[in-house]
Amino acid sequence: MKIKRSYTKTVILSSVVVLMIVLFSFKQSQTNYFEISKNLDIFATVFREVNTYYVDDVDAGKMMKTAINEMLESLDPYTNFISEAEAEDFRFQMTGQYGGIGSLVGTKNNQIVITEPYEGFPAQKADIRAGDIIIEIEGKSTKGKTVSDISKLLKGQPGTQVKLVIERIGEGIITKTLTREEIQVKNVPYYGMINENIGYIKLGSFTQQAGQEVKDAMIALKKNPSLKGVILDVRGNPGGLLHESINIVNVFIEQGQKVVFTKGKVKEWDKEYKTLNQPVDLQMPLVVLTNKGSASASEIVSGSIQDLDRGVVLGQKTFGKGLVQSTRPLVYNTQLKVTTAKYYTPSGRCIQALDYSHRNADGSVGAMPDSLKKAFKTKNGRVVYDGGGIDPDVEIKPIEYSKIAESLLMNQLIFDYATLYRSKHNKIVDASNFNLTEADFDDFKKFIADKKYEYQTATEKALEEFKKKAESEKYYTAVKSEYEKLKAQLQQDKQSDLDKHKTEILLLLELEICKRYYFQKATYERMAKQDKEVIEAISILNNTDRYKQLLQVK
Image (cartoon, rainbow, N blue to C red; front, side, top):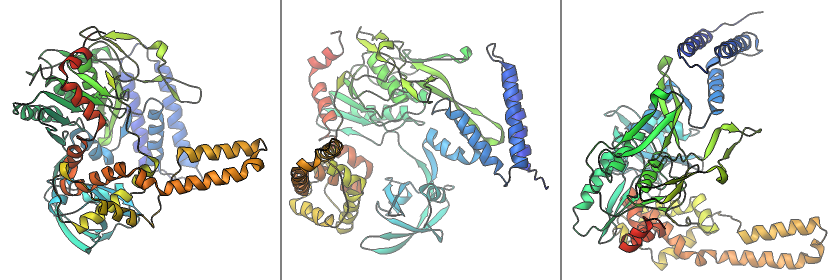
């Protein structure tokens, strides 16, 4: 019998030995060294036997990667192994920088489509538009390629060129040659005055320079002598670099103030983070917008502002990620992103929602029960709680789209109509004043007349459940005719859903169309006047008494 011994096996087994040495050199009195040694030995033996005797050749590297990922997944979702091939993507997550054309891509009908070019970067400069279908990259067909594949082909060293063949509605096949640049995705995609006296800052991420971008935005807003209040929007912001959250809080908080502290197993790594710089403003009324997509660094910002009574938090409860990750270099240019601590806001609360250290029998993780949550106090004495995200001072129910609007979005018909509209109109008025006409809405209805966008309303779902229940209890025959009538009536009512939800659908269409001309900033300029959370924030900032009351003990 022929036995195959690979170089990969030797390298991986060597890595295991190195890992054993590292583990033994790390002195922790609670660590059971014998158990570590025994289990590493078992693992290496299993790997060797499988690699030697398994009936088919095995991909040693892939098998090891699977083992590592499964091991880390048993800890928490944030502890990850980063291979050499993934290092560039990880760098982008931390810095917001990469070499490329500056555009998001997606799939539609098994084709690769430009979904959003970034303003001021090669794709936009070359008039690459949302909705353009990428046919070829450097002479290679995109057929069968994934979004990840295409992303890698579009990225490259700044200064290098990439040739694209695209298909555009109304123009056919077009060839474009773009010169890649260093792409820096902005942490603050938009800031500005949303009315005569209220400023608005959208914070989308926490990569390098996030604090400086918020500082610059605040300085620019303060140049307006009519400024009476500022809205800081961290909705949907998943977080990022911890030190940038400190810098952002520092824009509104005095120098030397504790913003967050961390505690972990390695006590020498426990740290207290204070603001280091002079603030931009300590008095300007501030409202922070949050939702369930606001996580990690977003929660440090909103939680600190709340604990220090520097501003009002408005929206929905945040995600509840109170875990801190550190990156550890490994052999062969790989890295380990590992959870090393929990963070605590100035009042002393940790807002981690899930307890990964105690899993249920099926491996699932439960949320901290309300009975175990502890009360803490803000600087003014207001009561706040730990264990489950930041509760807003003013809660606003999230926007819920109608079923027909959800279906139009999911089936990309809003996106497709905006692509068609852009092909017919070279320019539009500014985003804040753009409105579609009755004729445009009629045109949209004609556009989707032969398109599929099936959906089930809550009433239809309830009716279907009623049928199942009636059948199980042997009553369906008696009510069948009434059931069929109700079903037919509901189907007729769905025909009128477009008109019934016309205002909502028009807003979605106008937002998508405005992005084709004015890019990301169009979204914020447009939504600021129709977003109920922004409208409520404006109301609070314009009512001095209410603002002050929200920050005092009730």
